[in-house]
Length: 141
Image (cartoon, rainbow, N blue to C red):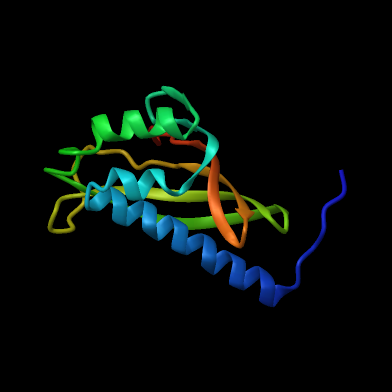
């Protein structure tokens, strides 16, 4: 497989754009905005939840999100931090995210594990979209 390198300035700009998408993930989760969250996905996206539920297509992702998100942040909040980006091509990236759960006032929740999502994103019509995502809980060993 052949990949195309991108220059450092372009790489930094694309990583910043990707971070903005992840910031919208965080905003939509913290504020329980399912439509904002679902709007980040490509129509044929795949998402696997932290509990292994496989959702295929924006319609399934939407139905699930509208069912579980309202009320989910009543006793906690989540933060999302981009920790690593690999450009598969200039318009496709694998994005590793650190997800932390906190109390509404920002304190770590005792006994709550972190999440370690992986988002495969594609840039289409100048906009990064979520295409294939896997949420994974971090289990301390």
